[in-house]
Image 1 (cartoon, rainbow, N blue to C red):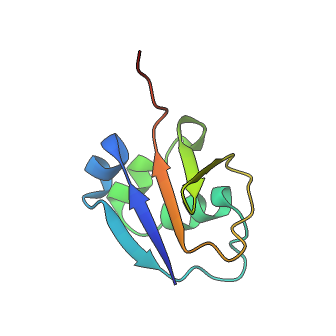
Image 2 (image 1 turned 120 degrees about the vertical axis):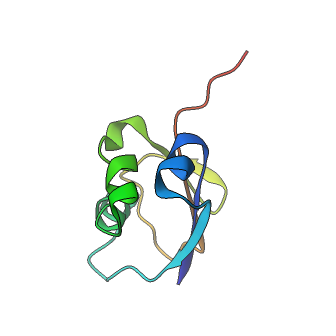
Length: 84
């Protein structure tokens, strides 16, 4: 099992900020996880319709979407962060 955290408009579209999932073995990286999660509900599908607009962190470390999950305990998915 892994915890998946959602932030900002990703959280709003899915309707929750957190869920526990047990992805199949075929899910090996963040992009695979996003694709697999998109099938969970219409909100997930909407949030993950454009994966290139997403950023991720595995166990609180920023990673590219092609990063392998390995033994990740937590994956955070969020839009790009802006600020000044």
